[in-house]
Length: 298
Length: 202
Image (tube, rainbow over all chains, first blue to last red; front, side):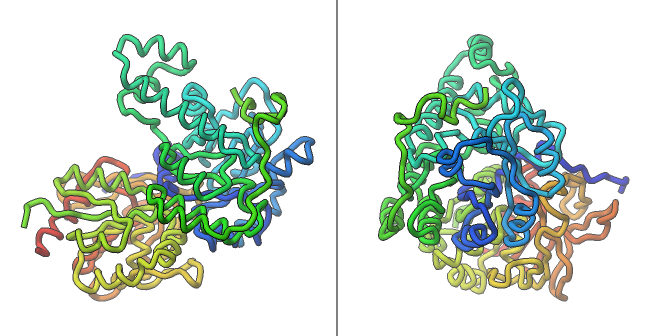
C-alpha cells in the first residue's frame, strides 16, 4: 500500500458531520447543568452560548462569542457534540472556537454582527460551520463561503414559529421552482438568487441542497417541531424554547420525541401533554423591524 | 422468498437516507424502521451513523433496546457504521457509563477515538477481501476497535500514517461493522457484502 495521508477538514467530513445529526434536536445551553439536561433528554448536540436569544432580546447590548471557560466546562460535561456561536464576519472568534475544539461553529445572526458586508471565509477552517438563511439565495451564498450545514433562521428568542415556517417554505419552494426550470432558465435564476450558477444547477438537478437543512428560530412546542419536520426540515434547533419554559427536562424530552416521530400525530399528541408553561412568546409582528434578527446576514 | 431481501434501517436518528440509498443501489429493498413492530417485516437491519450517545438513549426511551437484542439473538443479520458499530459492540470506552448497546460483537470500541470533529478525516483503506481498489473511507468523530474476541474477523485496518494498524472494520457471524461511513461515498461494496450475508442467511 502506498502511504495514504489522512486528510482532515474536507467538505465531506464537514457536511457528513451534519448528516449524522439528522432527525435530532440541537439545544441552546448556557452552562454545564443545562448541557447535561439536554443530553439526558436525547439532544443530538448542544449549542453553547452566553445568553439564550430571549435574554439577548430582553437585555439588549452587544452579544458576543461565549467565554472559553464556559465552553470548556460544557465540553467536559457531555459526550454529544458541542457547537458554539461566532458573530457574523468575526473570523477571530471563529479561530478561537476552532482552537477550543468545538465540533461546529454557528455563524449566527443571534449575536451582534461584526461585519456588515462580509461573512467569515469558512473555507479557511477545519471546523465546519452552520449558517442561517431566510431564502435559497442566502443559503447558497453561505455554501459558497464554505458553510457545511444550513438552518432556516426564523426569529430567535420569540417562541413565535411563524418566521421559521416562512423561511423553510421559502427555501424549499425556491428549490422546487428551480427543479421545474429548463436548463436555459437556470442562468437567470442564478442571477436572481445572487448565487453561483454551478451551485444553482446542482440544486436544480438534485431537488435539494447539497447539505443538511435544519430549522431554527421560534420553535417552542412539540407540535412546532413536528410541523417543521413535516415541512421538510432535517432536524431542529431549539434556543430559548426549552430553558425558558416551566419544565425544561420534560419539554426537552417532548420536543425530541416529537421530532423523531414527527409524522405520527398520536406520538406528538402524547409528547404535548402536561408540559407546563411554554416560554413567554413575543409575536414577531410586534417587534420593531430594526430589532429583528432575521435581517442580519445578507 | 424473493431474491431481494428487505433490509431495515434503524431510524431513531442519523444518516438513514444515505443507507437506504446504498441498500437500494445494491438491489435490496430498504425499509425505514421507526416502530418496534416493523422488526418483523425485515430480513436484516442496518444501524446508521449518528450520535451513539443519543441513538442509545432514544432506543431506550422508545423501548427498542430489548426487541433489538432479541432480534439479534434470533439471528437477524445487522450492519452498523460508526455509531452503529458502537451500538453492536459488547464493550464501549469513553462513553457515558449509562450508555447501552445492542451488543453481539465481541469487541471493545473507543468512542471518538480519533478526536473531535476537527480531527475527522478521509483516507484509503485496503479492502482486498472485497475485491477492487482500496476503499475511500470517511471517518467522522469515529470510534475504533481496541480489542477483539476470538470469533471476530478483522476486515479492515488503517495501513499507514500514525494510526497504522488501527482496526476499523470487523465481522462476527451475521454482524458486520465499520468505523467509517461507506454510505457517504457512493462505494457500495460494503452494503453489497452485507446483502450477500443476508442472502446466505435465508
